[in-house]
Image (cartoon, rainbow, N blue to C red; front, side, top):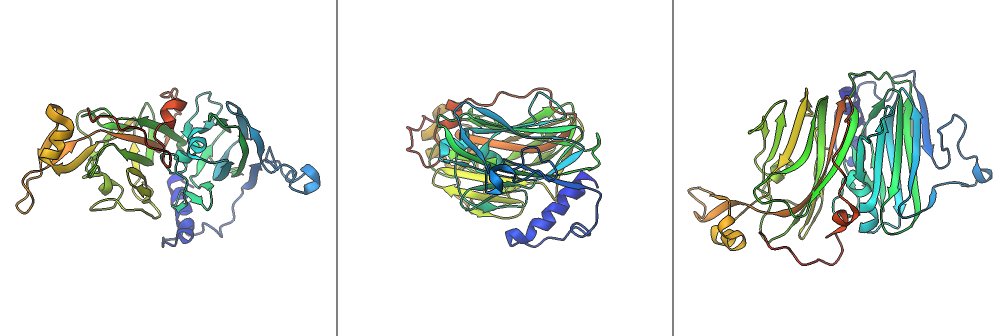
Length: 391
């Protein structure tokens, strides 16, 4: 089965859980397949056949990783292929903003020493700023109260390994996890391996587009992103255009959107919502968290891709000038029935993101993860520190 067909099939099967409708994958549930099911959890550390629930005389003897110390890393999933990760569930306790932003999830494929995935836990599961709240989408969801779920299919030919690192300042009482996978899947070099990366700029650089993803030297598929915006000044912040540069694009992109809420498939502002492929589970004051998955419209690249977004607002020109002075970059919003003094203007904000994509060959290096201090500033639900000056 082609990877794209598998993704579509899983999304179709998940549609009912999100009270949405979707065309089912013919044969997705009832077709018989020569695969073996396995699951790794603390109750079956290796996923061995007939090896689950053996501790404590079968009375919940080893349900989780207990007392994950600050600074400690644990390899919690290892498997030899070929196979396919089908579902990941996990949760942590305690789970304040600083814990869920500083527990780091890493995934390694095919024996690589470079993680293909290196993302803070809450951000990987679609919530920026250390926010914790339930929402449902086709590929990631957070079930009440804080059950993190990922249904993105992840093929591996030789091996897969997952680690969790407690980079918070708190010893964690618990890390619960369950990884469902199959063995015997046909996986070739024509199947991309799953990747994800986290970035944050707090604040962004004035006049420069924020980069969500940049990779080269491999064929791949961009399947979506999570974007977090903490606005650093009053007024509407969401006029920035999403730009996707493909296979040699330099100054101008092949794909260019018309506004931030437009890319996430809303319109006329941002309100809190969630559906199968796109949504905004957090819209609260200055804090915003959005996601979009390109399941029905995957974005393919043959050698390189760069995904960026502008920071741009819309306001009266005098308001914008008061914020940015002589450095202001703007264009009047010329319209016969609008205030002629309204203008689109460049702004700075606190922006973070997770990009989700497949590629093969694997990445050979990656940008360093922002350190704990950079990740932990200005999180949702914590007292606001003083806002930086616009320039």
